Structures are given as C-alpha cells and as structure tokens.
View 1 (cartoon, chains in turn cyan, blue):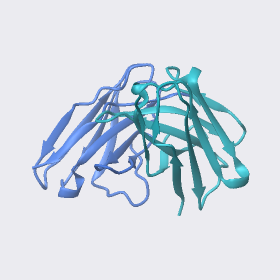
View 2 (cartoon, helix red, strand yellow):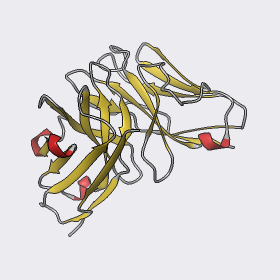
View 3 (cartoon, chains in turn blue, green):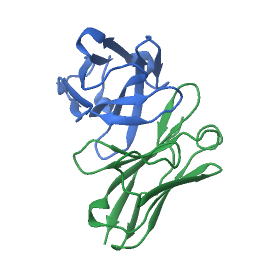
View 4 (cartoon, one colour):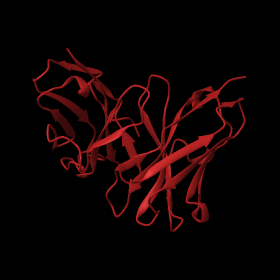
Length: 119
Length: 110
C-alpha cells in the first residue's frame, strides 16, 4: 500500500522560505508525478506544481516564479520550496502522487501540513 | 486560470440521489476527458472518487458516478448515506501541463 508522509516548518515569518518534504513508502516514482496542492483556510484546493523522475516540472503559472520542487530518489522523497511567503500563503499543504502517462489525477495524498505565515 | 465553478452547497436525504456540477471552459473541462473528483472529510486529506470523467477507482462505491457534457462535469451520488457528508472537489486538466480545481461543494445529508 502506498503511503505519503510529509513534514516541515509550520510557522514562518513574511519573506521567509517555506520548505516541506514528502516521503513515499510502498511505491516508486516511475510513471508518476510528485505533486503539491494547497488549501487556504476554509477555501478550495489549489494545484502548486509537480515533478517526475525525468526531471520534468510543471508549475501553476500564478506561483511559478516562487516555487521549486525537487526529488531525492535515494530516499524516495520529494520537496517543495516556496520563497518570499506572505500571509496569503497560509494554508494546509498536501503532497500527492499524480498518475502520469497523460492521466492527470491524484491517487494518493499525504496527511497535510498546516503552514502559517505571520509576523 | 480561474477555478472551476461548483455550487457552494448541496443537500439530500438518506437514500436520495444528488448531483454536483463542475463548470469550466472550452480550454479545460470542455477539451479533455480528464476530470477527477475528490471527497474530503473535515481535517482529512482528499480522496479520489472518480477519474477520467467517469472511472471509479477500486474500492470506491458504485453509488458514485461521473459524467460530462460540454464544459460541465457532474458527480452523482445515489443512495445517499450519512458518511457521504463531506466536501467534494472537481479537478480538470487545463492544457499546458497544468491542473485546475473547483471551489468545492459541501454536501449535507439531512
């Protein structure tokens, strides 16, 4: 059974860099995209971006300039960095596995990490 | 890239059927059969319920079904049960290797 477990700092100050990591257990990255999705308090889901084993990245145009997603295959982990955070970046951040090969859906999700940006 | 449009809330009584709509544009929902639906209970991660418009993952009840017409996708839940009460989100491929979600619909089982 595939499991995604995520962690990272939960409280940031404006202008700092958000950093989260997601470990994948029971599955590989082959044929999938490592994705991040966020959910602002009381709001809907927002796709942040993704990365596959070949290093191909896709980002939400509205966040692209601040987002980096990277992969650590030796530890079966992938990470999200979001620079210059503001209060608008306060959200629960989820890692998820997106099925590749032109299929575009998320079959497994992490438990979510609440990140609060406050001075 | 605006969020797909979903009704804020829907409700139904146990045993009834409800439908949640998800309206996009000819650039996303209307152009691709790549709509998925997710169920989210409070404080939990989303769970895949439908993919590629109408496909059901293994383990998901056949009370859940999906369809699409033009720029609008729909999720239908038949035989409503108390445990179906949750938020539901649609998601569509939007071209250019990007994805877009709907704003979410809160389902209340009366």
